[in-house]
Length: 371
Ligand code: UD1
Ligand code: UDP
Image (cartoon, rainbow, N blue to C red; front, side, top):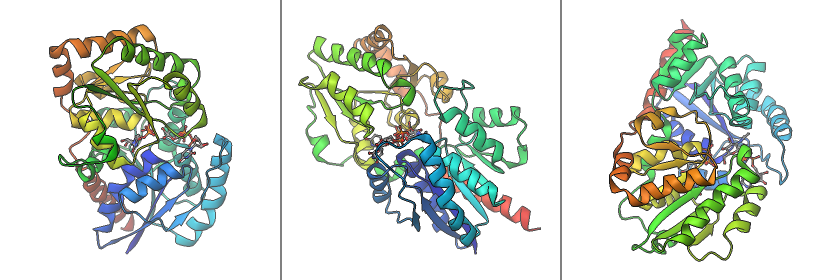
C-alpha cells in the first residue's frame, strides 16, 4: 500500500480536499494519511465534521493575531518530523494558502513529490489576490503533478513550461463536494428563518486586499440597496477574522433586513446558497459552486483567477465600487431576462467527478515512477 499524505489547513482546502480523501479511502492500493496544520480552527473543524474526516495529525497552528510568517514557519517546523516519519509516496496540497506553500516547501526539503490540486489558477497580478497569487505560482514551481480544474488552468501551466505529461484536467473538487451537501428537503434554523416572499442576497467577503475601505464601501452599497427596496433580505456569514467582523458589524448592525451570522457549517451554507436569489462574494470557492446551484454571482473583486465563469456568463466582476455594485444588483433584480441568462449558464468548473480523475492520475504517475 502506498501512503498518500494530504496536508491542508483552512476551510476551503478542507471542503475541496474532502472528496479526494474519500476517493483515496475507497482505493485499496492507497493508504491516506491526513495532516491538518490548523491554520484555521473553528472554520476548519466545522468542515472536517461535515465530511466526517478525522485527521491523523493536527498541528494546531492558529493564533488570534497570526501572521503569514508565523503560519509558514509553524507549518515548516512541525511538518518536518511528520513527513520524515511517514515517508509518503506523494504529498497532496490544495490551492494557494499559507498552509499550501508551507507544506509544499516542507515536502520539497525531503524530496517528496507534491501533487497540486487546483493547480494553474492565475491572475498574474502579484498582489491580487495577496498573497495567494504568489503562493500558487511557487507551489506549481515546486510540484511534480498538477490537477488542473479547467483547460484554461492547464493552458497556464503549459505556458509556464510545466511537464505536459504530468498535467491532468480533472474539474474542480468543489463540485464533487456539493454532491455530498445539497438536498431539496434540507432544513436548518438559518434556512427556516428566511422569508420566502423576499429575494435573498447571500454575501461573503473576507480577502486581505479588500479589508479596510474597499470592503466598507462595497458593504455600504449593499446596505443602501437593502434600505432602498422592500423586497430584499441579506444573510452574511461573517468570517472570523477580527478585521472582517469589525467592518461587517459597523456597516450592518441595526439594519433589520441584514442578518449577520457566524460562519456556517458547509452543509448549511450550500443549502442556503441553493435557496438564495443571488450571491455577492469575493470568495474563490463560492464562485465555483454557485453556477452548479444556478445562482448568479457578483464578484466583489477587480480580477479573478476563475475567468471561465465570467466567459460562461455565471459570474460578473463588479469590484468594490459602490456604483458598479448597485448597477449590477439593480439589473439582476429588475430584469428577469438578464437574471435568467446568468442563472442558466453552464458551470465550467466541473462535473462532480474530479476526485476520481485525481486518483486515476495518481496511479498513472506513481506506477510510472515505480518502473
Ligand atoms: C486564509 C487564506 C485565504 C482563504 C481563507 C479562507 C492565506 C494566505 N489565506 O485567509 O486564501 O481564502 O483563509 O477562509 O492562507 N480565524 C478564527 N477561526 C478560524 C479561522 C480564522 O478565529 O477558524 C481568525 C483568526 O483570528 C485568524 C484570522 O481569522 O488569525 C485570519 O485567518 P488566516 O488564515 O490568517 O487568513 P484568512 O484571511 O482566513
Ligand atoms: N463556506 C462555508 N460557510 C460559510 C461560508 C463559506 O462553508 O459560512 C464555504 C463555501 O461553500 C466554500 C468555501 O467555504 O466551499 C469558501 O471558503 P472561503 O470563502 O473562506 O475561501 P476561498 O474559497 O475564498 O479561498
